[in-house]
Length: 472
Image (tube, rainbow, N blue to C red):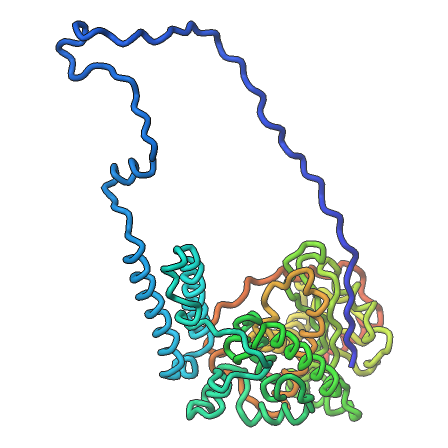
């Protein structure tokens, strides 16, 4: 396994010039006239009403309400109204769980619904706190807000425990955790999670649920019946650590390298071992270039066999390549090779596509077509990881960026585990029912000269493809 976490130095904040307030512009002198005194009653004959001194209203708010014809709501009536609202919210949240709607609905629908109800309940509780003490008959419990528990154990009626005993469990597991129930317990057995403050199967469910739906820790704590979000946070990172430790062997090259080359025979690419690609994971702060970059080597089955992640978002792929273990350990050497995109340098063991122009020979065009088909495996592997684990598509805060590379590694290892299990892609991912993140900027083409050995290797492969191409 080869995975690295690197961060670039902080970029100093640019200087901003603050516009000074606009100076006052002198105005022309005008003659001021004092208002005339109040006219006498004789002078006001024929007018509607005489001038009278302005009346000072001691309560302007009462005057405003009177003008708008709005009567203030009595405190007793307000309390009864808030009571009805609290009962409605409580009934809605209970109905959501009693009818198992949170089990049958996909989390993309049930999570926003539950979050909206809880936000309304919290807003109502804050409104209740503003009432006079004798009228605060409604308590936090009446809005169905879970109280703090004295013990860090899951509630007997938590969503996860109901899911385990629900007849909807077979169909709800892929929607909730991006894998089937048998694969869930197979993964649990492979990780050997310790029984600490939470049972191991609760810890794994918490980690998978956060990875799959990017759910915040307070939401996870409520759904799994935990006493505090910190327990959910602790369980999540413990599981990520266990995945990177227990499943790291899934990144290793096979001892028989011919198993990797055989997968590319259908493309008539002899001795091809894998495809090399890059992707970005967004960061909210610009000090990291707005993203962290991952470099991955993908085999013919779409599995990750080498991963290097955590590179500064402003780096170019060839800079990352020359600093990675893949480059220095020479996992691949001629006559074997890997395919790389146009952002990579052309090397004897790293074959990139031709630059196509109007007068390019047919050998170059055919080679680029086959090359593009092989590189699709890289896009598909990265796409499946980000579609399965939506947390990896979220913009991480700068303070959390240290943990992002480890979470990316865990997500890629889980991808390999599910591919080895033959786990199908969840239907929800295929249908694309959740909003996908905005596309991140790509990578510019490599502008340097290609290696002479790489040029000869690429020309030989292009000639081989023309000869191997079926005659029409």
